[in-house]
Image (cartoon, rainbow, N blue to C red):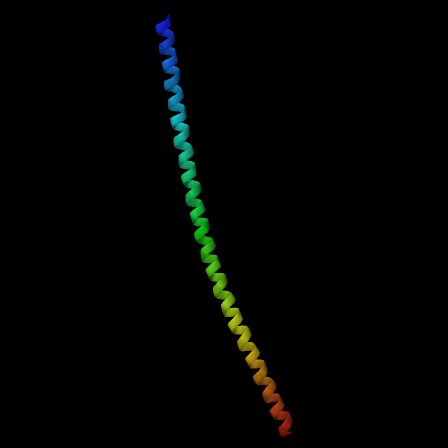
Length: 84
């Protein structure tokens, strides 16, 4: 009877090891997928940040150009007033 109990215990442990191994494999796979997704999100964030920085630089440049054009137009208006 003791030998039978030992065999049952061994079988139980084998089953438990198989279950835990399967669970570990699944969990590891899920973690890898999450990490890959995280990398994709980070890459997208970096791309968006770069686009934002480029747009902001373009905005600043256009704003400065607009100010220069306003000053030029005001100068032209002043000259016309003086010539009238």
